[in-house]
Length: 184
Image (cartoon, rainbow, N blue to C red; front, side, top):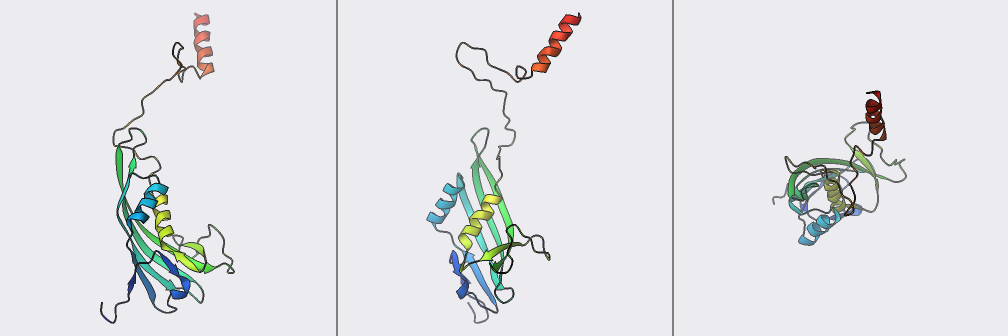
């Protein structure tokens, strides 16, 4: 590292008091095995690899900060139909403004300048690990599927009884067929 290059930090939680008022705080998180295991457990993943989260935090006014970062991860989930592992790549850019609670913070508010920037209340620290976990969770496919997997029509019932089908659940279809029989 030369004199002109800023230090790159890897702390998962940053104290706001440690942030420079002018300049930028550069970070590149290195996730421990325990942190990866925590994300895998919390999000009910099969596996999580190639996780990278790096960027900067810069002053944005007197008491506000802007986070500009990139997250990359390869996640493995179970197929909702076959339970076969399904791999998904997540690559996201994160832009967040952290402002003090007394500056009219509104949850779900969006900056007028850039609708892709989220606004959050500023506490005494910025939890980069939580932000990374949240971005992964928000970008997971809700119903991961193996290509070509499809759910067949399955019927279940007690032994010795006839299973109820979708057609049985449509009473007007039965009435229509009865009407057809009576009209003949």
